[in-house]
Image (tube, rainbow, N blue to C red; front, side, top):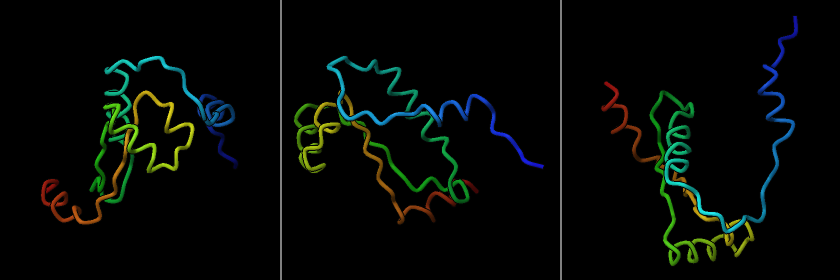
Length: 99
């Protein structure tokens, strides 16, 4: 028997879009915080969470990161960037915390 996606999930996937240029509208801090909260809930191997999230909102650092992103329009025009760094060296420490 074939299983069906929930309609809301199917609709979300079918209508997603990639944004390449952003407006100058500021993003409220509570929205940024909620995005981070939800990102932290992402499943990962053994719940070791081998990542760190860095919110980049400083204009100077934003310009530097946009340069590192080859001046892509999305990087240059975003109000806030969130850099996600994979940390393969933290799994033992994180496992000890879980125990």
